[in-house]
Structures are given as C-alpha cells and as structure tokens.
Image (cartoon, rainbow, N blue to C red; front, side):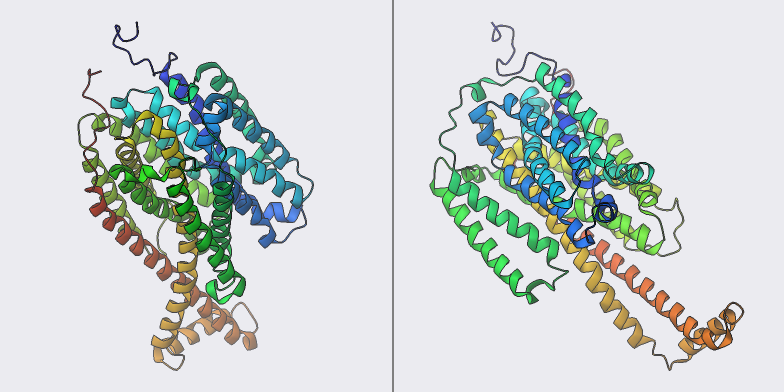
Length: 522
C-alpha cells in the first residue's frame, strides 16, 4: 500500500519534525554537559575538598566513558532495539545527572560522571542515525542541518549557562538542569520514535568483548595522554611514554581485529566508502578547529582582557546566533548547490576569520569582535552540515548506524586533540615570545630604561619611593607576559587558518552529493 502511495515503507509514520525534536533534545543535553561542567571545576574542587588537578577528572572520566560507548552503540541498538536502547540511555543519563548534582564526595561524583558519560556516548550516533532515516534521502541535508545546530550551539551555550548557574545558585545546578530536559526527551522519544525494519530484523550476533576491551584501552590512554601531556612534560614523563605505548599497541590490535572479524564491534569495511573516508578526515580536522577555538577564545577574553568566566561566555555566545542564522540559508542552498561549493565557502570563511583573529591587539573593545564571532558560528554551520551530508550521502540505511558511531568517535577525538594542542601551543609559544622580547629589548637598552624611569616616577606618587623601582619592574614584567601571551594567541589563530585552508583540497575528493532536492521535488 505504501508503495502505491509513493511512500518509502522504511520511513517512520510520525511527523519527522517531532522525531527530530525528540532526538535533538537528547543530543543537545549530552553535548551541553560536556562543556557545562568545565567552568564549575574550581567550585567543585572547593566544595568536595579536592585539588584542581583532581577535579579535572570530572571532565576526563566523562570523555573516556563517552568515547568507549560511541562505536559500540550500533551493536547495542541492533541487540536491544534502537528505540529501547535510546530510551534507556536517556533515562540513565538523566538519573546520573541527578547523582552528579547530589554527590557528597569526589569519588561518588566521578562514578556518576562515568555512568553519565557511558549512557551519553550513544546519544549522538543514535540521534544522528534516527534523523537521517526519518527524512527521505533527498532531504538528508536538512536532517544534518538540525543535527549540526545542536553540535555547534551546545558547546557555546554550555560555558555561559554553566557559569551563570554556578555563580547564581551552585555548581550542582549545572547537572540538575538536565532533569527537566531529560524527562521531556524521554516522553517524546517514547511517543514518536520507532525502529525501522532493518533494526527490527537485525541479528546482532555475539558481543565483541575483545574489541570492546581494546577500544577501552586505547581511547582511555589517548584521553589521559592528551589531558596530562602538557602538565607532565609530554614524553619527558616515563609514565606518559608507557601510556603512549599501550595506546599504540591497543589501537593497532583493535584495527587488525576489526578488519579480520566479521562480528567485530566496529565494521571497518565502511572505510571502503570513498565519501565516508574523506568525510572522516574532514570531520577530524574540523573537530580540531571547532573545539580548539571554542576553548581558546574565552581564554583570550579572560587572560588578556580581564573578563570573568561568565562575561567571557557572554562575549562568545553570539557564535550560536550565527549558527542559527545559517541554518535556513544552508538548508535552502543545499537544495540547489553542490555540497562541495558550500563546504569550500565555509572553510574559506572560517579560515579568513581565523586570520582576522590573528591580527587582533589588546586595544579591542567589548563589541569589536561581535560581528566576527557571529560570523564564526555562521561558518561552523557551513562546514559541519555539508561534511555530514556528503559523508553519509552514499551510504545505505543499514550502514548508517555503524558509520555514525565511528564518525562521531573520530570527531570527538579530533576535538580532544585540538583542545590539547591549543593549550600546549599557547603555553610554549608564550614562553618563546617572552624570550624573544627580552633578547630584543635588553634591560640596558635606552627604550627599556626610559620606560622604567617613567614608571618609577609615576609609582612614586602611590607607593614608598624605595619600593617604586621594584614595583616598576613588576609592572614591566606583567606587560611582557601579556604581550608574549598575545603573540601566542596570534600564532594559534594563524596556524588554525592554515589547517582550514589546507582542508579545502580534501573537499574536492568527495563524490558529488546533493543535500536536498529542488523545491517541490519528492
């Protein structure tokens, strides 16, 4: 009957927009929680009598558990049914959020965060797969635009919302806020989401315990190395070298195992698909760019302009507005233009904006960067949506679940690497520029002595004369540090631009895929 009516029987009977709303609530909540706790770490450490280093495990434990479950989500969906598994994940995530907020000790909080990360890890690939299958193939660009809205906006909203909740109420409300969102997502998923025939009829096979164990080892080691590498001198620390060795061995064994085992946790034969391979490389690079910029730009406002964490969050918040503005535009253009043109435009715009940020000074005002920040959100959407559309555009519906888990894992790994590289670059380039400035302007030079004397005369009016010399030297050192840090930010933005421009060459390795049909086509 459905064939006679011209309707694909694999499509859901419910309105796809209701399905999209249901799964995007879950995805937005999970991505938001990745970032929302970051600004609350000092408060968590103080409240639970922990050091700042110990508090960082609140983030690390979540990310590791999240990464491990991502590629395994396809097996669980086939074994238990995707809708049932999704409902279970949302319920456990919501309960774990309550336990995080009510945690009496750091150990209890870490256990709750591991539970939260494990249950949240499946939400992104499941939501993406459901979105792709809820709309006909010709409208996958629209589905990816909706998914991209959550992925791009949530990391921007997270720090701002987390800072406001922490300052106004308590760090515990950064977790309690998930409760009403989770309850609404549960209701809508239970009511509107249904499993397609290829999920209902799927045979999951035996669980790949060896593959899951190897995945746990290499993703866990990778996250620990990235989190603690700069702090412990990277490969100067013996334990980090052992962690890198374990990471390398486990990753190689995991790849070999998945390539030679038909019932492996991840079917790596999906990498035979040209568009998916190119898309994975691009989303890895985009993950580096996206998360490094999201982490670094608030630091610029805080470290160099003296903003509070909340004010810095407010300053970068308009990026989400840019992403929202881009959504209807890219949906319209995706129906008419080759996705490769859209992606090339997005990368060019993003790279140009990175170059613009690479020319800023300490004289910027509160609104100087408003338009560029909005434009970065606009560029994010024009990168993320076409990459997703082209990556999945040549896959069969039964391949999407496996591909989505692997794809999201690759993007998250790129994000973790981007954050770590950005932190390392800022620290090391700042030290380098400080040495260069000191060498180019020695203390015996006339400009330095003139500046020192002027500062001494000014400070003598405010402090005792015998202390004015030391106070003047302290002020000059402070200015030196600020200038060196500014140059390290400039280096970061320029390196980011090089990465983005280099990605344009990869775009044209895609096979042509259109996101949407022309208006009126079905």
